[in-house]
Image 1 (cartoon, helix red, strand yellow):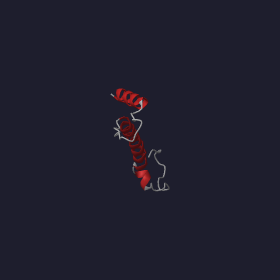
Image 2: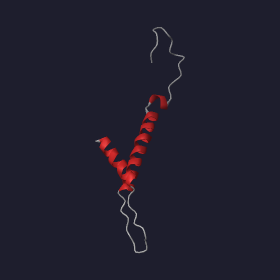
Image 3: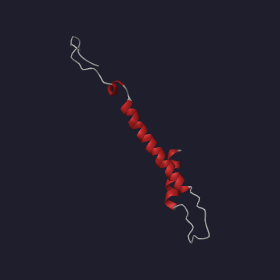
Image 4: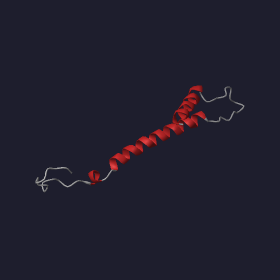
Length: 79
């Protein structure tokens, strides 16, 4: 709290729990970091997915090339 000397502080309202703590910034940071981590983990899971081929399948699914390129570019950028 910054104020000029001599200003009465008795009329100031009491700070509530959210104003006294860093709860809201911590929630925002947790959502951002958790969302980014989940997105990265999902892309890695899609890129590394091993599909079991059965005799009934006509086409064999492989990871899409753009997913592999995106994950590779992201890992190079982060390194």
